[in-house]
Amino acid sequence: MTYDQLTSDQLLKIKTLGELKASGYQSKSVKQELRDNLISKLKKKEPTFEGIWGYEDTVIPDIERAILSMHNMNLLGLRG
Image (cartoon, rainbow, N blue to C red; front, side):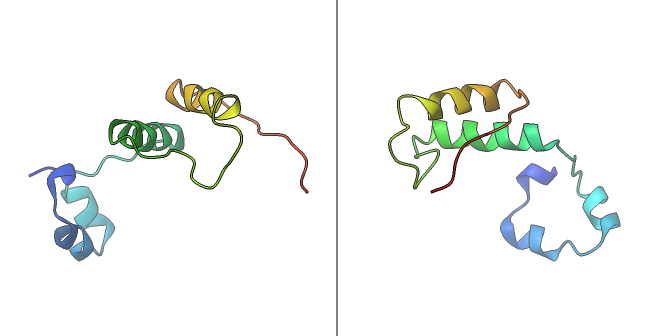
């Protein structure tokens, strides 16, 4: 059984680095983790950025494309 096939209960029983390695865990970069999570949300047709209003047709599609392409991003803006 691979790490991806483990149940939640089995994952919670992993307590040491040795057990984690033995389970077949492969580390991912932050970019890859973001990409995988976004793909999962898009497949399930879930909202990708809950609580952000007014940018559905402008900023959010650009951010989604950047995440899917694993680009580096700097988000600049004003507070308030």
